[in-house]
Length: 141
Image 1 (cartoon, rainbow, N blue to C red):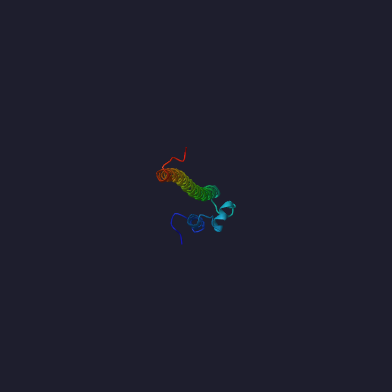
Image 2: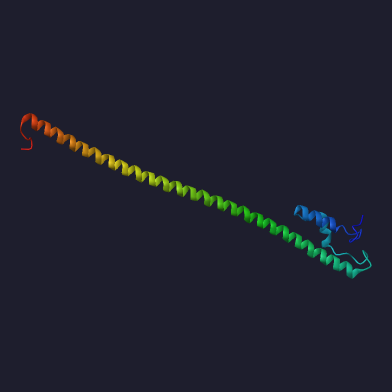
């Protein structure tokens, strides 16, 4: 039946509502593109005005749908870029941490070598002392 505001001969309300629901233009709304002919209605001017308003509304709905798609794409791209940046930062942090550990290991290794050579010097010095005490003379002479 009629919704009251619109006449029975206007399927545009359903077309607009389905267009709004799906974000896609309904195939029945495409008849808005064709202006009514003179024998469709007695009030030609009013009919043209309605057709023009309907066309503007249809274009606005298509633009809104297009804008929504573009916004969705932009959001997806932003999420991807954020994830990539986050992953990059994590990798950089891990790399930095690994570098610090390598530095620590190198320093520890150098320290161990230093202690080892000190022990070797102490050992040879001790051996020297023991030999000197046993033979009663210094081997350096």
